[in-house]
Image (tube, chains in turn cyan, blue):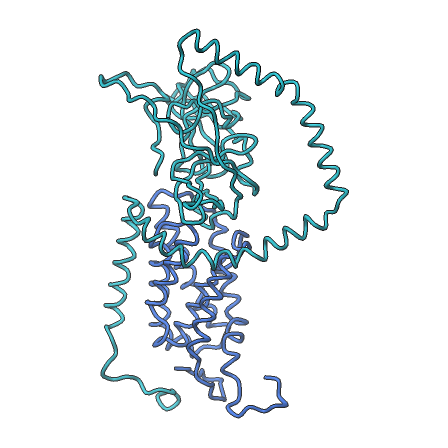
Length: 303
Length: 174
């Protein structure tokens, strides 16, 4: 064996023993795993590595986007015309409501002023293109093409034309990571439109949502629409989140198991709207108030 | 340190450092392609890293594994340290088994590499499940099976530059 080798083995300077090196690297890996997962204090490291990895990632995405572009191009003018026609129809259908919306908003504002209720916040934000899904199979996240340079900060909610998509959890210089509502760690405070009952909806990780902490006899029906309640101070109230698909009521448990499907096409590619952060909510009253099912279990914006 | 196995009748050229680095970076690029979301697509970095750790244990080792793991963690949006840990263990195991593995014919080499690759994948799954992640489904463990199948064509591809003759013949393509 030694005769075939091209370079003689360095007898004297061999570096640390393999087992020592292994211990060293394993300890570092485990340390950064725990620190990143528990304390989330390594975002600076992540951002600096991302500066190097990001260009490679953009290069890797190029073939896919070229294929997408070619497919759109080849689909031709006929399909485009059809789509335009369909969108016009859809606009016509919603036109009566839209035309009255302005009138209703003014009227609403006037009535609110009469009742001395705080004005509703208006939603504003910026459109971001979804670049790709994070490859991590253990969580549900997407990467969008707006980051620190566009003024995105962690905690901003993301919606699409049908409902809530998720929440910005990490911001990089030129991109941002949005955790979808279907992620296991993501919680959104919601209320049932039909009766205004508040709760929190959690992702299940398999594309479904679960409405937790609802008593077994709660007034929830299959088909109920869930919208954001706005109690968290992050999501504006009234954005649709999901629709209840099945309910299991078992008196052996304190809570009913209520499943819902997200309304936004969270697992598809496209564009999302990243909403501007809300105004600060007034500080909660100092005395210990009784816990409401939705209000107590809010999720902090930055995970 | 090209080690011949018992069937080889020729001495290979030494592997060039830039070629090793290039293949590892190309593997990183392949891992970031949109195809990576398809089920059963192998972890290219793990495969190429394992190959070089077995072929050239003195040149590619745990340092490369750690850096590539960090890059994969950031690219995936995974918890930092997840890929680092798995790749470092893979590199160590591959390097310490390299003397044995290279004495087998290719098919048996692939069989010996399979547990290493499955182990690297399973370690990541365990880490994330302990940390409260979703179960990604058994499809997650199909990737290493396909990677082990690719060991045979992969070996030919990655050793191709070393098969060149020392004296270049202008009339010979390779």
